[in-house]
Length: 144
Image (tube, rainbow, N blue to C red; front, top):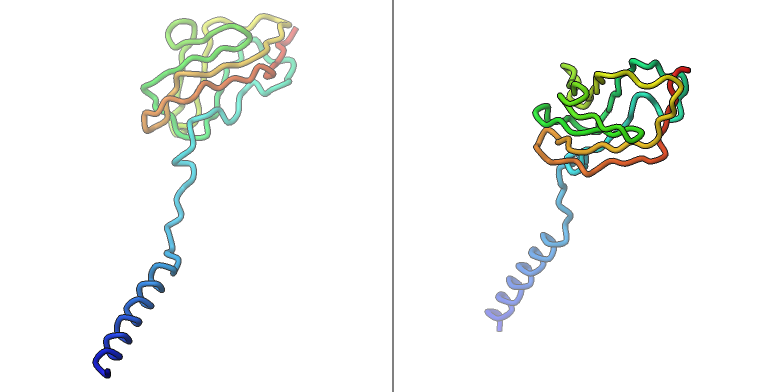
């Protein structure tokens, strides 16, 4: 009987240890949530609802993550599309990999209202293509 009691106690201890190990929370390292975010437009210049924008203003996009400078997407504002080498130069300023400057070849028209923006084709630093960014309420007006 003593032999069985000893085995029973050992098995009981073994199962208690297993249960404690399974039920104890394991601390996980905190991960940077931005790793899982898609590349997206965080801010735009000219700002939304602004008036008297100079005709020679560049369009500046600020992204939520670093971009791949080798991939140059397209920006459409007010129905006009801007693509690198076609009607603008797309510039990634040194030291700001999350910023893109659209340097237009032709100025905005005087006194015009530009409505809607669509940004697509850019990639993040890991090579992931951004989902299309669209804001049809975005608008600005140039100087008269």
